[in-house]
Amino acid sequence: MNPSQNAPILEIPTPQGIRAFLSRTPLNIAFHAGGDSKECVEHNRSLCIAPFGLSSLAYLNQVHGKEILEAKSGGLLGDGDGILITQKHLIGLIMVADCNPILLFDSKHQVFALLHGGRVGLQKGIIPNALAQMQVRFHTKSADLFAYVGPSIRACCYEVGEEIFASPSGNTLECGRISREGKIYLDLTAVILAQFQEAKITHYAFSPHCTCCGEGYFSYRANPQCGRFGLFAHLT
Image 1 (spheres, one colour):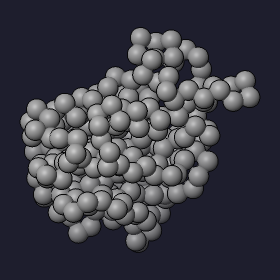
Image 2 (image 1 turned 60 degrees about the horizontal axis):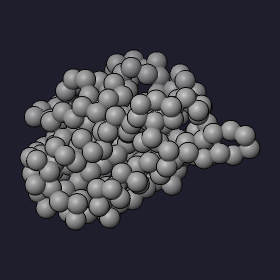
Image 3 (image 1 turned 90 degrees about the horizontal axis):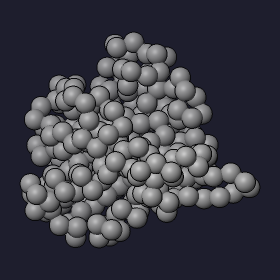
Image 4 (image 1 turned 180 degrees about the horizontal axis):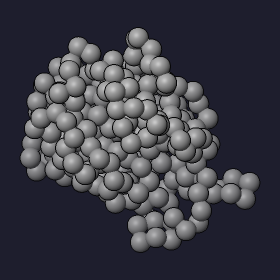
């Protein structure tokens, strides 16, 4: 792939104190997917975060869990699915290609978390875990939180089997179950919204885009060999 000279990014409307944006196709920003060289991926990441340098970019080896790691510096933080950032000079990155990239920003204490919200991570409780850590460490209150959920595979395309609801944590997903024409579909945004409402978060925004049937974002279900797009954020 030959990356374009100008990174195709989409700015996200956010409260004062934070900047968040999405990378889009054709830029693959993942080393582990899409088949691009390390040099190409680094170039794509640089285009996205300019004028910041790559040394400021904090990212994870995402494992579909609920572990939240605090970024003290840029680079690979380790295995996890959430990044907590408290410093202005660091940029967080969550990589996805159907899973939900999620931002939780505490506007009072000027800290934020980025989460990899796939089905498994949501079942394991990555959102409640992130909120609990922010409440313990920073006394975060729901009234001070802004949440954003980026493009992901939506109920129009996410066909699933009955077995996912039979797992020990399957009840977490019941509010997203949709039966249509003899098939079962899963609305993960409904699951996320239910968790926001349970946490009394009222200031939130959801991207309207489905990664699978829409354009501009990678989708693993549409193409298992695809790259990854990212949700980036930094304090201002």
